[in-house]
Image 1: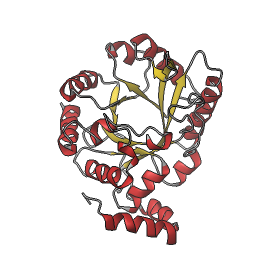
Image 2: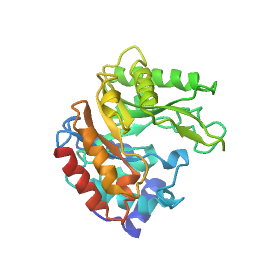
Image 3: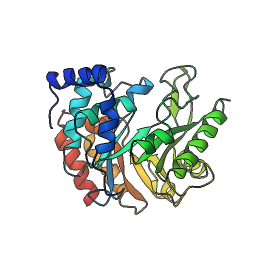
Image 4: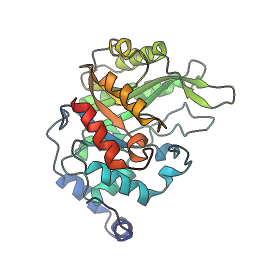
Length: 297
């Protein structure tokens, strides 16, 4: 499937209303991926867990990810391209894709903590409101992802840290990947939560994330691309996937930055959402193909 029609969407609603058991049946019958190496030797995942945290913006469109038929259509188009290995999402998105038949042979990473809603007073209190380790393992998915923001000035941070540590341990018990996305964060003068993308801050967040739980055997880090990635990647021996980040108006410059970071053997892949699903100019296939080519260079 490379398009999602109005009939397909109507079919999703009908199945959800009349035959919800199909979700579990299709998850159990799904063709499993052969591993986490990726078809190019590196893993390329499309991310779509933003809506569950109320983060719907892509570029200049504040509600871009709030149109589910459009989002699903874009995801199906991306997943159909050679070199795209899978998806990272919350249960609603992943189950839509299952019902559409788009996840056979794909790596599936379930998003776990979406409670720190964007723009709220409690944003740093990132509670686990999505998948848990047991549901990820029982569905036959390959891992779970958690956002781990450290705000030195917010007393809610230790609770999130403890919950992330517990989730890393539980995923390891099931022998599936724990993908941890850490940031040093804080509120700016207007009260908006911002991530500190200085090299020092990213190194600090990576070292704290790497030390979560009683084992790091199944832990991967999802890290932003910053100026001195060599120093960042030297902070740990854990596998790293690069965070695609916001949609950039200068896609060529963004790709050049990604390409430089991909030169490191520590980088085992990329997780890209809005930058591929809503690229400048709108050509999803072109953006995906360029990313795949860059990963194989």
